Length: 165
Image (tube, rainbow, N blue to C red; front, side):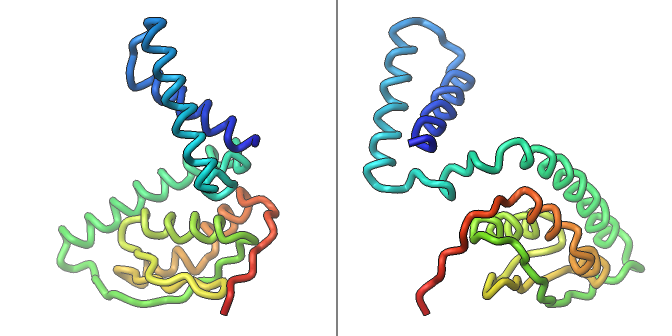
């Protein structure tokens, strides 16, 4: 129930932010539409800790700030490699360890890798992620494990669900 209430509040807050209209009738209609959407989502059984990860909380904001800095650094590196023909573009496939305790944490990690220019997550399988990197330098940044540690730090100890084989 906590996830449904927080989802409703986030939806209504987003609606208020985007509409910018605060007339009573429209506020009531906006609230009613948010309640309807949360009701439908709850009935479909998609309101959970993965669909609305409110449990990550404030720890995620610090991670987003760090990730934005990493994205900017990688953008600069990729732009230099494109513009300077002397810098090597030597694509590599590497496998990195995903030490997150939940599937949500592994998805956040794989998506963070893909968001960083020059790297793409190809497959997540058995606590490992297959990554295509534009250069060995970008691959080396992943192999240090800094991103893995930071994602693990924001991921809570949600029990890992066993997947059917």
